[in-house]
Image 1 (cartoon, rainbow, N blue to C red):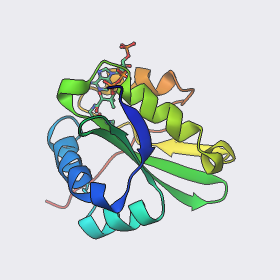
Image 2: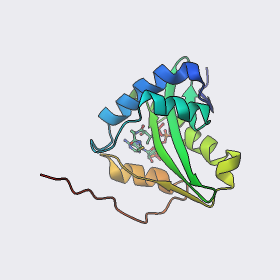
Image 3: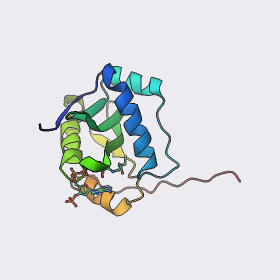
Length: 140
Ligand SMILES: CC(C)(COP(=O)(O)OP(=O)(O)OC[C@H]1O[C@@H](n2cnc3c(N)ncnc32)[C@H](O)[C@@H]1OP(=O)(O)O)[C@@H](O)C(=O)NCCC(=O)NCCS
């Protein structure tokens, strides 16, 4: 069966929540915050999550709008065993093809990964350009 990309539905909430936890553990910097289940639920209702589905959910992409002119791709994740088969690209293409995203002049993404170089090259394939580096100062 081929993996297809569809809008997440409320019955996908559990799978997405598990994937989000995996996303946090396996790859991104420990400073990034997870969404709560309620936030994920709202995002599903607002049609802001895409999932890659085969027998199970193999990946997800979450985004949000700041205003009509700008939006952010918050997270994209593919389960480890399904990587390097084009699923990440499929999710990204489906996202960039959504009507409201096509009309959005600026799409931001925080390129946060422990494998930064690979991630930058992934985003560059989709014409994202590097504009900033995110830093944090923590109270001791
Ligand atoms: C980034 C990610 C979604 C790509 O998914 P994928 O299904 O493996 O990607 P595809 O098979 O469609 O495309 C492969 C491309 O992904 C990129 N890539 C490969 N390994 C990667 C890694 N560990 N981290 C980031 N990007 C990677 C490369 O650009 C690769 O292109 P190449 O094969 O021409 O070198 C996946 O590696 C992932 O979930 N990484 C962990 C989570 C993460 O870093 N998310 C981004 C921050 S929100």
